[in-house]
Length: 35
Image (cartoon, rainbow, N blue to C red):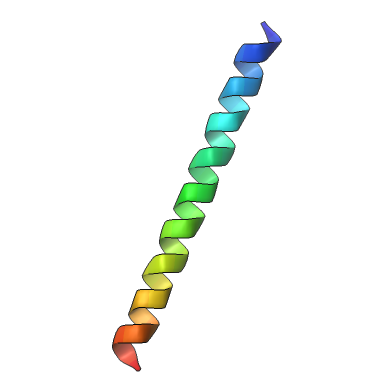
């Protein structure tokens, strides 16, 4: 079914967004600690 594919894509996109946010947060905390 097509909705399964959509759900799978949604999960992948969600995972990508989450990892991007966590990496950005890590960079922000690193720069805050260094400065």
